[in-house]
Length: 151
Image 1 (tube, rainbow, N blue to C red):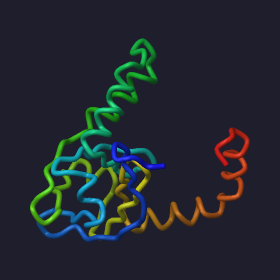
Image 2 (image 1 turned 180 degrees about the vertical axis):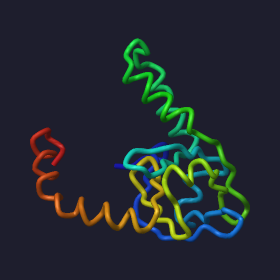
Image 3 (image 1 turned 180 degrees about the horizontal axis):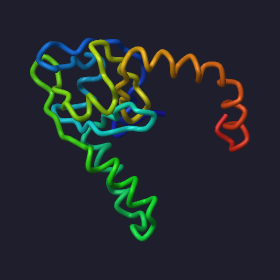
């Protein structure tokens, strides 16, 4: 059961980036996301968006990883150096920094996908391509999750 301390971001929304590079967050998520959020490079060429409390949990875990391993250092650099704290304005919009827009190849239409404790920000065309591919693998993915006791 989800308690008041747990973030639960679910659903899929398509929004446009305006001429001033602002993106409106879904009204359903604004309270959970808060007035300041962290946007960073994510996996699969999307952006990850975290409420500050979830970002603190993630960085705490990352900070405990042994930095003697090149893979750990590389991931830390990729993930943390690309992170930006952004403010949510009074009407629920954020400014997406250019370097992050370029990383995720965001055009005018953006899909915001709720993934439990974070939001993923995708270019609409790339999201639809990814979604078609992953939907074709759903049964195999469910079987793997069953093997590790998730389903």
